Image (cartoon, rainbow, N blue to C red; front, side, top):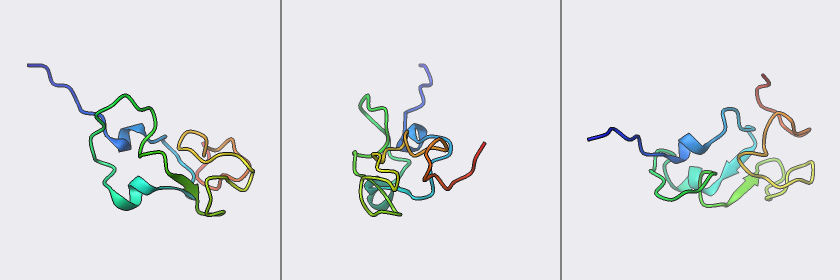
Length: 80
């Protein structure tokens, strides 16, 4: 019997998301929930920026787990 770790929403999150990044799954579910499909981003696709309260960030770009990163001008999280 092989040991296969089940993928969770937390596993799909980038290492350093912007602190202003938010998603419905964080508020209504557990990030430890197992992902049973082949999605590449966590949650159910409902993402928003806490600075703008919309799915568009202050830099007029879409909010997603992978794009809310240190390369964006509006990012205010830890920088590597």
